Image 1 (cartoon, rainbow, N blue to C red):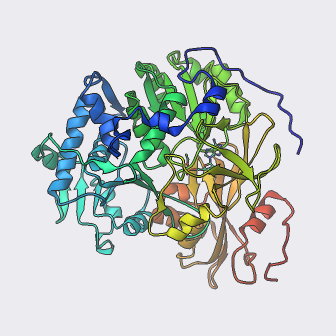
Image 2: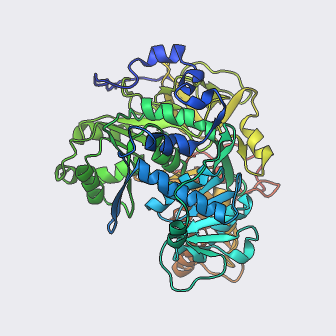
Amino acid sequence: MTVQHIETIPSVPGNHNLQSYESAYRSFRWEEAEKHFTWHRTGKCNMAYEAIDRHAEGALANKVALIYEDDDRKESYTFEQLSKLSNRFGNMLKGLGIGQGERIFFFMPRTPEVYVGIMGTLKIGAIVGPLFEAFMESAVTDRLSDAEAVAIVTTSKLKHRIPRDRLPHLKHVIIVDEQTEWQPGEVDFHVAMAQSSEELDITWVDREHPLILHYTSGSTGKPKGVLHVHGAMVQHYLTGKWVLDLRDDDIYWCTADPGWVTGTSYGIFAPWLNGATNLVRGGRFSPERWYRTIQDHKVTVWYSAPTAFRMLMAAGDETVDAYDLSSLRHILSVGEPLNPEVIRWGMKVYGRRIHDTWWMTETGAHMIVNFPAMDIRPGSMGKPLPGIEAAIIDDRGNLLPPNRLGNLAIRTGWPSMMRAIWNNPSKYEEYFRLSGWYVSGDSAYMDEDGYFWFQGRVDDVINTSGERVGPFEVESKLVEHPAVAEAGVIGKPDPIRGEIIKAFIALREGYAETSELLEEIRVFVRNGLSAHAAPREIEVLGKLPKTRSGKIMRRVLKAQELGLPTGDLSTIDD
Ligand code: WTA
């Protein structure tokens, strides 16, 4: 492969928290970052203490920690207020008999109650399980039952997607809004909060104690529970400082929902560990609402995703011009490849560089990034964080030279690395099958200067609007529909969403292809799993390409869809 770098956007000189990437990369050791925390001597810690209580006890007590707004609510909370509210929540859980290590899920829109609840859960050493509010019944059931959750915090509207008769471990359903009729096992959040003390003896835990369980999709099997630990805070803190470049007077806005890892690692932990003011916007996306949020709150650091930037770009430059966005100092992106043209457009309309960052649910925090003090090569994800060894390796674990495509891998042992796949040690081990390496499942190459360039997934995982969707989960739902005999699901390139979900199905005998039937099947997946997992396109085939052992060959479907050669067909059925 020959690679030409025609384009570099130099960094703007400034007082960046990390001034010299090269020297930091050479000398940095994680033990140094730990010294920021007093617990590095005792080993006993708590994420919620470091993110909230430490500030509440000190000079930042009256600083605004959380600004919340949606179309109806506008609120703000200081570190001291969040400390007391999360103490109440922790006491509420204790009052219900919930203790260390138990799983508490959050299934609701990202209102302040989620942030209070997550901190309160961590304070008693219980494990947080975030769920995206768009999940429907089977998606919710799979996750709650795998984790054996004992409690869930939700709303009166969403609770109908939680089938309690199928979830024997689930004892408490905490409802955060008003409702007229209460079922057994339901807890009124506001009443219980008022009855709980705002004093709490925080539970000190080991740094390896479980913190949070994020479910994410692979190419086979059901979604897997990726487990992180309290000790991850070292990396959340450091990347908040170096990559988000957070300073005392920043207003920081991460647009991700806490149902996904970006919305927790960088929507909760990193900003608060750095004592920053964290803005949360609820409600739906619209360019006007988003720009008004930046303008009204004078947002300085903004972390979003390529799909959002592409939608903002599609809204036209006049939309940008209608708002005062001059407060913005630093812009970042994550979740999908960031197109060079989006970076160029960002330079034009925001007058700022958009800094790409690469990481995954499993890595817990940033791995490869563009630092503010570094030249950007548009299209590249940047360089590994100090303390992180990234490499391109072949399928046997040999290092590949620059500009050769291979597996993007990370040397094991960074602080925010996942510690388990819940209930599934063999899945966990698969990631570490090449001795000493975590194998990401992404393919990439590294150029001569150490910049990493994303090329695609090695497996069939779909990335639609920055959300990971496992084809297997969608296929399984599709074949539950009475008309569907078999199904194969792929990601089809899309200019705004990165990829959309396309399903190929074969119908059972007695069913004819009609647009009503295809729409019914689409709605069936949407109502069973979630809107983002429903196929935008469905194509009916006589039969699907399969291996002789009966496995559907997604790569053949994809190649045909893209008009590419189908490759080696020696294992195909006929
Ligand atoms: C993809 C989100 C290209 C990648 C934090 C990865 C990216 C998956 C980038 C993880 C990027 C994430 N450029 N692709 N900067 N960042 N990805 O677990 O395929 O939801 O493996 O974590 O998103 O998605 P996840």
